Image (cartoon, rainbow, N blue to C red; front, side, top):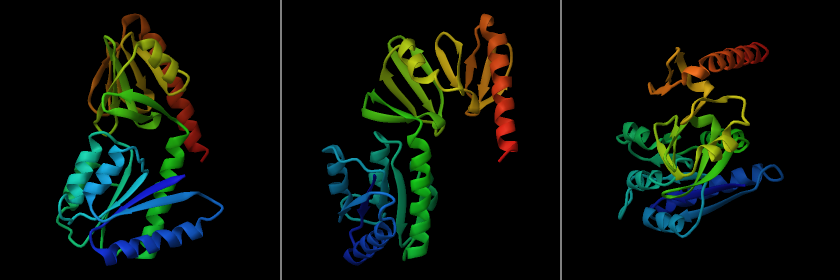
Length: 248
């Protein structure tokens, strides 16, 4: 199921986007279930999310009264890091700012059918990959889905787990190292170098006897007794990954 929110204050543009999405749904029939909800302003969109509506993708206009699409995206990102956002607007001036809210794409109107279909194909492909390796946590802002391929490392501080996401976001939840081990160590790319950390080996930049330097430039300590095991596991994992890529 792909859930789409379409938001535009211009009735003609909103109708056009709805028509294009309906064409895409017809093309995808018997392949993927898709549903959408149309909104004429971002305030109603935010209200729908607060009342429990969940979306995988948002097609957002930027220049709207009451609340701009950019302001709506900033508010959405406070409690949802996963929804894909595609901006469609008549102005290029917000293109750089769109990166700050993790926009999937920034499209200048008019949005053509071929371009939108390609974007929807990409969104679906990414969601399918992520859906197979994710889990839900009860964070401080509500239920949040953590995708393991985007999780750089997790740290336990007291009764709090801090999930460090590759985007730079840090999501906090109540939990223990036992909870974290049960969730992550079944995956081959995760390892525990220290009693307070579990890391994703895909994000290791440098390894030495005392610590790991992650791609985000964060340092994760390695317990002295764990160094040989961590080094061996990383070499073995990196070697297997290299062979996998060689065989593609």
